Length: 419
Image (cartoon, rainbow, N blue to C red; front, side, top):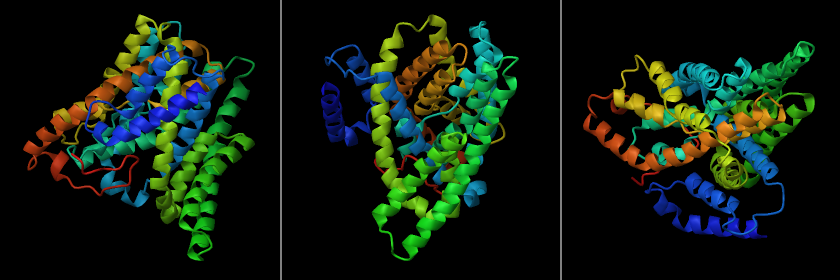
């Protein structure tokens, strides 16, 4: 009862101040993680007698299914060439380089890790979460080309990183007598999931489109039906031995390109539901994961977390952007604003479930990284976007950040003309 009361009051109070907070250094994840930490410390009395870690896992799963599906549904292949040059660089070059650099530094920082466990840790921390620096991707001060690159990258890299997490986890668990079974398991996870997702997305899109065209289905149920496809693809894939999260991602990608009208129906609707689940996950993360593990994180783990948010992200991003003609400042801006959030939290749970060697250490490192990211990226998002925007404005006629026009693509966090 105390937990439900706290959540209700927090959402109401935050909602009352939400418009003002958009122009402040305080982001929604910062506030909800902070309140979660206070709840875990007992500042609000008992925070529920249930299994808080299990609740955090369930919330993270529901949120990631929704986020993977809706983010992928926004991608339009026809517009890929015109507007995705920077995101493609970040995903096709920056992400693999970041994974390799992260694994190398993990092996150096934690010599007892196997190579596979180091790769698991790096893959868990590769995906970014634009919502942690919402001011950056929603502020018109930041050139459209830059904020769109960060938003699209964030929307796709969690779905792209998941197969690596699964394969590396399988490799980390292999022994001589179980190598074949682990490899078969990993292959089924990363192959059946896309097949199921594509089938559900395509057939479901045809069905919903036909019903809407015949006026059998109203607007609200078109939105609900699209979300039902996300969970349907997840459940069917899990039943046949595939990975449900990959299925939800591919389902959204298929729906967005085979039935874009249906995908558009759900985007505003899903953004509200996704925001609620996301904030609840951060609240439970603070109370049930971060606080209990906070004092078990070693100095080397904190150092790795800091490097993960800086050098392991910024060097690969800079290398991936070579030849793009962007200002050097933009290299640093795109490199810094790669927050770690929901996807890393859930991927850490996957590592726990798969009983990857060193899973306890991996969880602690992920908790430290997400904690640092929530507060560091949240505090710098608003002032950083203002300063960066002013500098770009002074170079409007010469900087490609400004004069290179790109189509405004649908993204997870909408742009608001609120300065």
